[in-house]
Amino acid sequence: MGKFTVTPWKVEGEIDYNRLIKEFGTEPISEGLLQRIRKHTGELHHFLRRKIFFSHRDMNWIMDEYEKGNKFYLYTGRGPSGNTHIGHMVPWIFTKWLQEKFDVELWFQMTDDEKFLFNDNLSLEDTNRLAYENALDVIALGFKQGKTFIFSDLDYSKTLYRQALKVAKKLTVSTAKAVFGFNDSDNVGELFFTSVQSVPAFLPSAIKGKNMPCIIPHAIDQDAHFRVSRDILPKIGHYKPASIHCSFLPPLSGTGGKMSASVAESAIYTTDPPEIVEKKIRKYAFSGGKDTVAEHRLKGGNPEIDVSYQWLRFFEESDEKLKRIRDDYKSGALLTGELKQVLIEKINAFLKHHQERREKAKKVLDKFVLRD
Ligand code: TRP
Image (tube, rainbow, N blue to C red; front, side, top):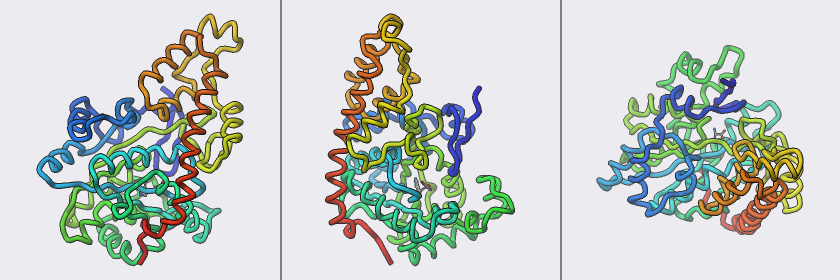
């Protein structure tokens, strides 16, 4: 078995998602749960059909409550340490679908405090500016105005701090060390920070004075924070948050782990123009094809390790088209260059639409943002 690491601060190696379910103590998304969701949504998002969202905590409880008329709200977030790349948007795209299907609120946290504390090279001004840059990408996905509340931890601190203190009072240093692996040379802000990330898991309940179930859609690396939330929230009078977890869009280079914003060649940014997208995919997308055309025609390619194919699992919504691509690649009918072309067109169409909406988002940013 290969070695891999999945923590909120580091994702590395060839990830075995089934092993994570066991190690973190989450549940796989069963056929039964999918049917239950489908009953309310009419169809299943391709991220669910393809097990890109593969694990959860307490989603059956969420459905029980929903069916009794106790509506949930959504909470997710972003650590603004750089520009948004398309990997960051995977959980947001799914969150948008949930909001649309269930017509519920979304509370979106921008942890500019976290990225300052955990990054030697970023100032508070940097992370705060990036929070609002990144918010444009969130809004561009089409979240509902009036039901979507985006806040920077720095600019909504008066509200957040009071609630974070309640969490912090119940969190011991030994728990923080055990869950996150901190040691005595880490700064004290880092130990405190998880208290802030717990707050939106109960904030609307605290504000309204009425407990509401919460679903947190997120990439599996954030689970440690919400293990802490689930331990502490009942002690301060709130529900444990439920969560639903996705796997990572692999980096273009196919070297395992997640797409990193700090390695420009491994990522495609939401603001990349079409020529750059084309160049990055042609040059860097790891290929599961054979060395020569003749050999590829004879033996076919391997979609399991081919990054272009893996990305199409995330971005090609039609199961039928995806299957045809897979079959043709395996048989050798489709060459690596042709597969890359399919991906380039798909990503560029997605980004063209996104970039138009991102421009428009600048005008309505204030309508989505909470400050105090
Ligand atoms: N800590 C997360 C990050 O670094 C940001 C975040 C805050 C988040 N709250 C969240 C992510 C809730 C998912 C769900 O990206």
